[in-house]
Image (cartoon, rainbow over all chains, first blue to last red; front, side, top):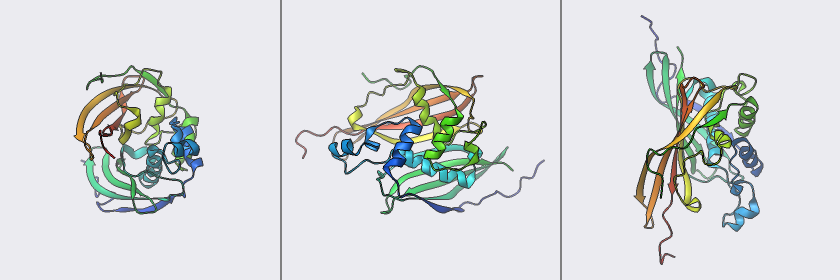
Length: 140
Length: 144
């Protein structure tokens, strides 16, 4: 019998916050190329304004990718087993996204500890752009 | 007519390429070495770019009006460490759920959940994507 001891993290443990930005249209264009999402509302300002928007805005999946970047820096790129995001507020050029994360559950598994986290990317004005729930399997 | 729950697309290949992973990692402002080099693994939301490889007509069509279409939620599940460069995955989409809710200003909001299964060459299910798509309620007659 193997004693795998105490969990590596306790519920309520927090990751240090990280800021992304100020975000730029160039970042949205770079994400468009990387992801293949070429909706012009994210990089063509003239078109975005003619459609009634104040300017271009970020792809929701771009904000999700920044939050994912933050999450894997915390708990490991190879350990991720689930990453789910909910899109809430649009993100605009000049916004700074502040990412934060907290452990919400820890469950013992045969091959380690499944650590569930709640993650949030918050805009400069305090609005939540995207929130996420992610699982990481930490080996013992 | 809208495709029903259970309707699926046709299978397409997702070639996991190291250059594409590196480009995605740069766009997500990650300097993680796990996303560089010949053994690079995919970032958590990378499989979204797999749609690039989908031939016309391979993806399921939920039938929503594109002008009222929103992406509500997106989830990726990995049944083991994330896939790595050099793998050729086979992807297929299916409609897992459809439902409706009243819109805030009347009319109906429609929801569809589309699941994409990603399988390795030997058929093992390695990852799943789950997208919640929303069609906002149509503008009401006589509304301001």
